Length: 298
Image 1 (cartoon, rainbow, N blue to C red):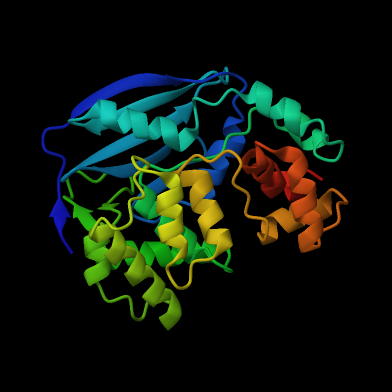
Image 2 (image 1 turned 180 degrees about the horizontal axis):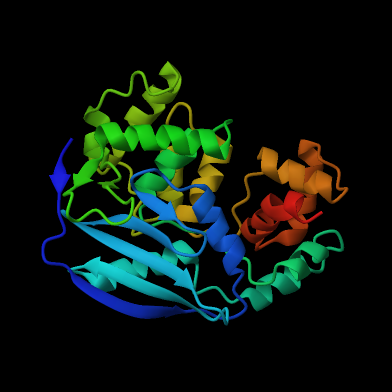
């Protein structure tokens, strides 16, 4: 376990502008339900987390404004511009909901969801490797279970912020690929197969054989990702959605999507789900978000 501190950070405040409407409650609720203990906190309005910038640490705080047109941004970092850019990707602020909702609302069953929650975004990530780890942890377990195990991994392998730099529950940086590859994950609630998958993922990311930063070809990265034993179509689609901003990625085998379609009275066989999703191209990732929220609508 290593220790880091914010070396004389400059605190900056600004706004992330977005094309309205912004479904802020859904966006922040999604992130808030998945907070990793020590790395992220959510108080019902403000989402706060640590971000690794090269070898330094940053703290970013995000709060939606009341008008639904921007997000208030506060950053403790020496490189605020880089952190702001990553925060924008996390919140999908550059998306224009209009064209997306025109396509999705053409489906009569999906239309009530689109009208009930205008401006739904697909949450991104501040770090592609972290997102891939979270996706592996989320395989076939609850959101609560995945975040609990993620918190244990952070406590064992992550970088600890200096006590005077920890901010309201944000005490750690998520581990680097090198840290995770070298760590023992025994006793954290993971199966042996899941540990092997995480270790291989970390090893490939540490050696740059797998680049999840978004700076290289998504096709190449996702092909490499799916070659790892224990990573299948669901995990790959989830990473494509959130790390590579693939607006048409669709985890068709996701249980939440099946539940959402069932709540709307749609057929839920594998073939029926895939067939219906063809109507939502090229915005199937946004349809997935609506379906994940659907059980709470009806």
